[in-house]
Image (cartoon, rainbow, N blue to C red; front, side):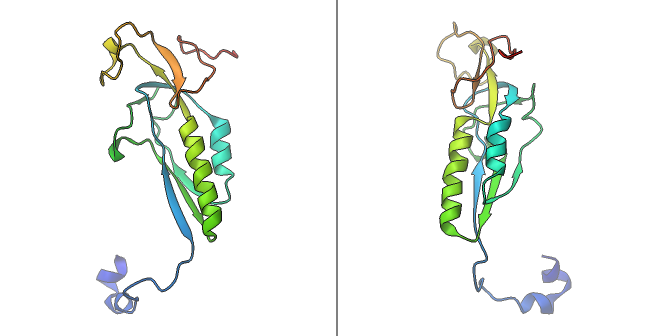
Length: 152
């Protein structure tokens, strides 16, 4: 945009359309299937994401720390960050995209779900639901209902 305003001759010299593709890219959003406070990040899954050949970078907001509060993802405005993937080989990117989606789907963070009376979204079907911890993908993580680590 700088060239468009300050260097109009340079900007006018650019082609109207890209002339070639340098790499293929994808963006994987970090989603939450639960509402409540974050009790942990899954460091192993984050390390697996970062080790993908297509991994370029990530944006994970500070709310994804122990004690941060997340709401259930319902649209593009309620995602909790993204993982950027870029690779020159389209097949490699596709493989890494599938792996990244699986890791995000398995849960990058654990949320302590709250009883309906304490929830703002009313997503719980029963007032009798006890507070419990779960990963955002409903996998078994090592947190008890009181938010403590089973391994501690």
